[in-house]
Image 1 (cartoon, rainbow, N blue to C red):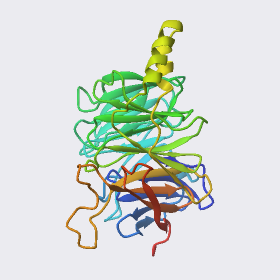
Image 2 (image 1 turned 180 degrees about the horizontal axis):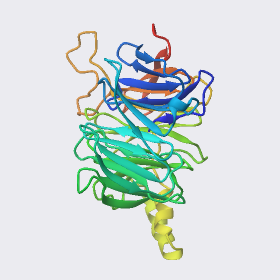
Image 3 (image 1 turned 90 degrees about the vertical axis):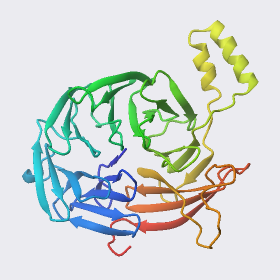
Length: 379
């Protein structure tokens, strides 16, 4: 999920990792910037005026952006697609109300308004489908990174945590694949894994995170306890395909990032017994009992800055530079031993953490390895 910001002290209005988390797109009061994770520099900048949304297709030259409405030519009802290499506009698309979200993969371009979603073929920009939706004032949505399956997750209710999954390759581009009740409260954050088989969700309360297996999504595959106090969940992200077992990270409004393993959780006998008793005494007692024993994160990163909105991503660790023959990212059992967690904040700081010894009995070692300023060209 991208980060929409009211405006930070630096004028940042929007932050998001691209699809492979190698770049960060930044929209601010001056225009748009692309920050490269590999070079730790701003690799592209365009002073267009205030921009509220900016998305990049992987590490290509294709950019899509939406104005913040501070100038007539930068209306939030217009999406501009451009080639960053040639500085040329490919096409401008106008809409009846403000664009709240933009999602792109190699097959589809999705534009989200408050009560409507437009699905375009990326290659031709032909409008394939218009989807009427429940009120979605924050533009919550998630499009798979992979082109096949090409799935779009959208809230189907403004009052509850129900979701609808659309198959954008079937029919006219918006066939409903499945529906699910993800949470009791409205959903505020969504994320797909690399191959579109898992969908993570968080509600406005932010105490429980859920992961749903696709395409059926009949029940939650995993549920995790983030904490007991409500917190805003600004970002969810899965680990890349090379990480085993798969991981999920969540950035909260409390200045923390939590890491979870996607593996079966062994429930204690006491909780199993309590669930059975509750199920015979009160309605929904089984689900109440289940929530008593939700697994918690295996690692928590506490950001050195104040609790500001942030987005997160996970990278596989690189091979050791010391010349060891063993890959540093894998242990003998086949599990990943080390990952890198990236956290970009609304204050323009990128934090890069090394999380090592993921299976250590007392928890992994988490070290802040680098801080970078996202808006400085010579970072």
